[in-house]
Image 1 (cartoon, helix red, strand yellow):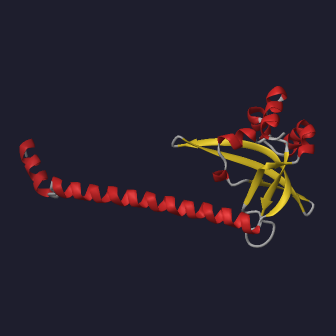
Image 2 (tube, one colour):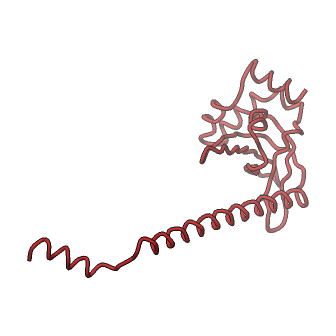
Image 3 (tube, helix red, strand yellow):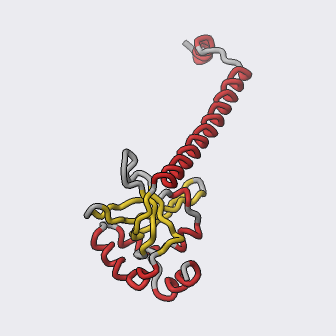
Amino acid sequence: MTTEKKLTENKKDSPNISLKFAGIIFFSIAIAVIIGIAYLGQVADKSRENAREMIKNYGTEVECRLTYKYETESNRIHHYFLVFDIQHNDSLIELESQSFDFDREDFERAIIGLKYKALVILEGENKFKYSKILLDKPIKESYSKVYEEREDIKSRYKGVASFIKKYGRTGKELDEIWKKYYK
């Protein structure tokens, strides 16, 4: 069998999909993807709003300590995370604040080792699920003990030393943040 005959036979065996039909299928898939992305965005917004409402309605204001913070980036969007611990029923509990409520300025003003007020759900089925550190409510007396708190944090939590080294301002820079945001 010659190559020309093989090509002719393959053409007969392959499905005959017109370019117009292929374009319609591609267009339909593209529309479905766009609708799916929009739907997922709405679901995420609803979830964020639910978390905000849960914290607002059921959160208890407690004293916490910012143990570390970090940022991530995906699709050129920065996400900021603040991790803190609270003392509850003779236990030290580590919690992550809701990241969607923070912007770059909030992230910059958050001082590792400083104590703040936080809203935390302490009871029920959502216990410790939703929490938010209140950066506008620092415990001013704790500023003088920031370095001691950082040493305690390093001894309690593995891997935190690198976050403290990267994001834990010291000296003059720390004093400037304190004066700018908290005095």
